[in-house]
Image (tube, rainbow, N blue to C red; front, side, top):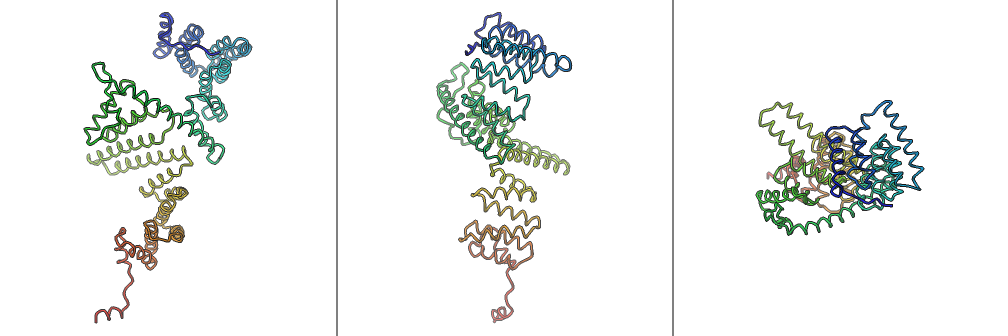
Length: 480
């Protein structure tokens, strides 16, 4: 028994006036009690399909619940429980009456019991979106409750338009169970479903965009999308980029921005160092996507880092104290570390982020922190040798030479040809021996590299510095 949907513009003038009055009461005057009465008794119950009123009613109930305490809260819960009891009696024989009682229960007390009953009624009416909304609100009250997350996933499973939200929930569950194969398998399946859904949405948006491409600025204020239809034109200069920014901004202002347009606009902002606008646009993109997007998160981080570096340079130019500059740099580094740590927590199985975090630590001289990150990253087949080499360099810098040699020497055993990979391992094994003051072993490593490529890094200088002295007889023979 689906409820016929009715929008504000289809209501009678009298009901529109009631809605407008209720909206002012709730959003401007914060008079939640009166607003709830108007919305529940005069709109939602009269026009059950008026979703805008229902959304505003939920907002008012939720906000009022934050202020109700003591006996008033207990009294509200008792009244809500009675409404739920009566509603359950009506659920099968008169579900619309049960819906009215469910609305009363929420008006009396916005809590889990009322919301769960509302979900039950919505399912009986075959109103799956209302049921999902109710369960979302239950989860909002219990944000870390996994059983509620699973209930919500079960509700949304197979319902078009919810694959992205399912992925969000699966991600949250997976962070709590990084070693649970069943959880991780479900996460991968959810990611694939979300990708398919997003691709379908993008395809639909592109079709809509093509329909809008023909629109020209002919005095109507509509944006000119002619260049966007063919894809971005060749960008040759900063002026070209700024022109594209102007056009994309027109599209955004017209309300026709797609995910692709927001992404491209943000990228253009970054190219001309308009980082504050880039961050704002990426945040809009993230909100519109409704799902964690690692590329967006990293782009926001990039702009924040750029802004911070600009501020640090301004401090240097203005003659700020060295201690203040050092503190600013320390804060920036901590921000980058925090961003990386969050990525690792959100995506514990993606070892590429461990490699990136290791590089951040390494370049900052934090070798003790970098080494374990590189050792984890070495589980990536394509990154194995490079990650282990970095780990060895970390241990050498920490004075743990045995660990460094213990990593590098076994790597050489499987390297038949003197390629760049083998030269790199030999070079850093040589630098480790050099730090250990084992000049003979160091020379042997550097000489192997030198014989293959005399221009590799500073190996020529290393060989010249560490070359053993010529025998005395050889010197005399040479002189004669």
